[in-house]
Length: 397
View 1 (cartoon, helix red, strand yellow):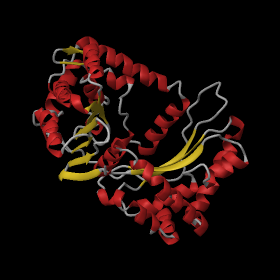
View 2: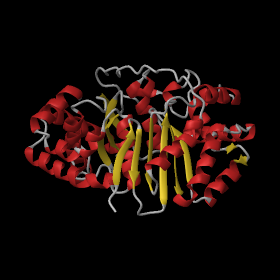
View 3: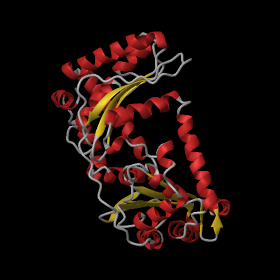
């Protein structure tokens, strides 16, 4: 049976696939980590995490036991794009699952003991970052990359900000802002469009209206010159290196040529960076570059982790390669190979209905439309050497 993809309305995606007795459903609410008050970073994270720690007649253990009995999973998470309520369930148990999701969203217990436990666990996760060099390096890199921009704020908060958040703040945050006009709904699997609409009405549709405040996201401030941040970790034999800069947003027309260019420079195991630093010199087992783009701003990052005595030579080489990449562009042979790779690997991103569902959801949240996915092969095929060169010079410095 052929997979059917359609939009029931402007913000409701339905993918019908009756080959498995499983339903996946997801809705995105507008409240995001970008709404956290200054000094209370982590408030939205704690609020959304508390929803699945007891609701209605269920304490935390009973809630998760009920999900297991239904053959279901339920996740509530928050990001820069909003709060996502998502999960899977055996299609024969969809009615019971709908009632359970509605209970989680509308009747959270906000148990004081569970809240204290969640804060302890969150603080422990933040503390563990200090012991994981890659995570610690990433945290400092993002902070320095975006500085006072909203994207530089930690989603889980800090030790200081979590200390300012009480259970009363979480309850108030939930009552004031967890609701409003949902950004997007998506469902796939063994369900009809009518049943999906009923599921939406019976779950997120039960939330009270909320006036979620608008957050103004400025353009990331350009970084002048080279800024070096050193995080001293005695006793380490390797250095975690992050190099990069803010760059274009997801909807910019130069994104595709920049992405293709990055595939050549550091996007695969056979790319330039990997060949020179990993294969030829053996300085770092992992080496790559990436272009990450959000609805408002993006970033370009080079990443590798050489031994201490090879760190400076590796940085110098990566910087020289970067300068050449931006100024000279790529060759026609590299371009054709990158196009083949991207086009041939693209089907994997939508291999299952669930992958396609989340892929299309994310496109909409980034401000892209379905043409981005449906016309991906044509977009990649049309990229030229001139287009890549122009994108590199416009957006990489």
